[in-house]
Length: 228
Length: 228
Image (cartoon, each protein chain N blue to C red):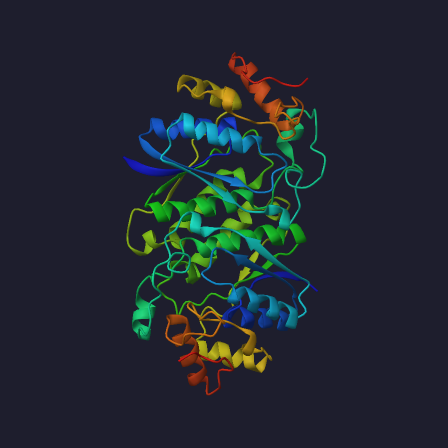
């Protein structure tokens, strides 16, 4: 079985991405980040998802993006609530973290090189978050080209690194349907940007809206409780 | 004055790179990493260099590349000693850290985006370390293309990010001559991979050889003491 590094945030997208990597026959090595998030609930979810999937190794990297500031996910800026989907989709939100996916993929690349993997999975989505520049297909393609020039494998004539983005053109409903068919346990995933002190989702931030609307469109019941 | 992010390792290349950025009229913001190096002497040098150059802000990012392992600079593998320059140049050395420059440049990109800089300087050199895939011009060009797709500035129609590599085609002697003309204080730089407990350079690792040969070829005296 070929090894693959899977970026695992603890959200429903990355949990589905892991299930797809396993379905495609990859031996999963997962990678999460403690990057100065406002809360650790999504990391707890990532650990549970890794355990539930019997991954070979789950690495949590500590990095501190608060050193630079600049985002509602790491700063004390208010998370926007109850915006409609057009507003979510069309602009770069305050929850955008500068260069986050580039940093995450760079660590995934280091991890892949060390364990001898040539495949990296990331659950980015170009539809729900079209405002995020680093979720676009052309960004991912350029990262893959760069990755193949950056690493030993390119010099040594191997096949090179592939960045897999199986969710990139799927709607949230399609992601949830696909994951449900693959047996993903969405009760252990976490999506909310602004949960209460017990980790219960707010139901009103962009991530909660997209998740709830996705389950509704899929005709499925979200197993998570909400505080509203 | 335009802001620039300059990657500052504490070595002579990055100190010279900082001097060149200042000469070209940039307002410098420096970035260093505590990445699980075997020693902190190069970080002490980076702090001294930043202070001596009156940089606007010097950020030290803590990351732990030992999580993945795979390099003599972060693991307990022996640093090679007394190799000739062809051996240094032709192969990927055990001191190669997987994806290191990609990780460093990714953080520089985040920093640049937060402070509103569009210029990043990195003191990579394609001649001395041709064995490092992530020191090649084609790698840097691909990173710049990726960076311009990754960030807000590309979406918002700005000029975009430029990755400057002023040393990339210079010999070590040319770097030292250039820096000397610009007043770089090489006595506060650190190059050795394997210094003694007082930070005194070994004189025999690849970095020491390249540095000493560079000063000799430049007809200048290396102000650093060596333990041999």
